[in-house]
Length: 536
Image (cartoon, rainbow, N blue to C red; front, side):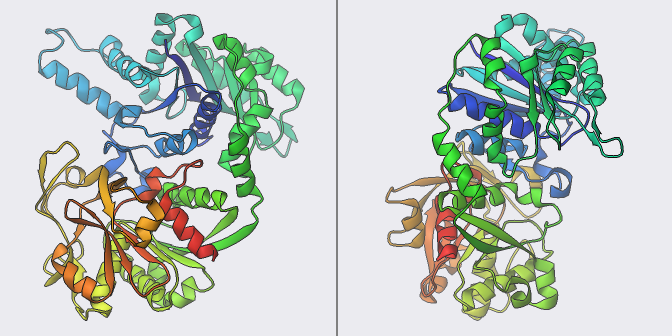
């Protein structure tokens, strides 16, 4: 029977529930357990796909095409696995399912209520995510006491009654603030948070206490006594030099002892490889600087998977990857050299909309002309094609129909129809609603023999990467581009997946998002190859 660990948060948000959950899952996985994870988001949006990056940070895309919370990215990166749509759900999805069932007569004319109908839907989704695993770590977004979170709290409470006591564990992540004027760490916010949790009917078995200062033994004892928790189950979670250090810190804090005692099991994690990679992140031998050209630079969370993928590559190369954040709009004002100079390589990330595009094009031209290693991802590949068409093929009006629907040379266009993951035909025009017309999730591609793409990935016929975009490179121009020295190095059912330059040290653009499949223990091949080039 699956064992469930529910992770809730108290006092305030952004305490690191996701990293805490992923770290516990990592320890269990490295102990030989079959582990999966679930993130519950209490907001009413069906998914974060149409939210602004400023509102929600990055949208993480799963292999089966679900647009999910960025915490799922952390989960995959930590436990080196592939998650799916069932590993993240929102209040919007729960209500959508319940109302659909009611409309179809599934409740046989009963009055539909939060308890039991909405709560039952939540429980069935939790059980579905946990089936076939020894452990399911469930992270509930938000903070205890939020109105939106109450049905989920009720579901957690009920599951504890439905399963044997030793099959569910509640972990509460909370804040122990340091008041500098008083020179003291304060336990009262944690006590109040636990009281609120118990008022709802949930008693935590463990406290993970975020604090900027070490917690003295006496303070831990005080928390244990006031919150009715075993002394060894008050775990300190101080700031770490790297998020990947957190599992090691938890082990030093003795987090396994209360977990093993609670579930009546004996676990011995093998963290040797993990520890080596973390050492390479914290004390690397080399360092390299990559110019990261984007437009959402005020919110670095928009590029979370990509910055983490660079860290993974650096860890395997024992190299610190410094990021030179380059605002593409600033490049438009002062030129590429002024912003990018002294960087070892250039990366142009994905994005939507026209703003900052000319700056990205200038950065791409700078990389191409000066023989600087370049990686373009999604829009970064599309713009590499446009830049090449304008400046090498001489098609000065080359553009994407995303930016100019009337362009006479649509190097990037909307294909009228394509097969989605299920093999169903999808129709798209530039007037189609944004949420439903993207190529989303995992698609196969074939690397061309002898290319940099193939050298990075290997000799297999087919590889899989994840997509999140509406527009495609136009194959009408393939012959002209190739004649001028651009190699189409990856294709998927006739769609252009990757491009390279023949007479360049290392210049690659990929239509997919390689960062979504990069994990600490298994870095993404093309990102690893890119960072390797930057180190040379």
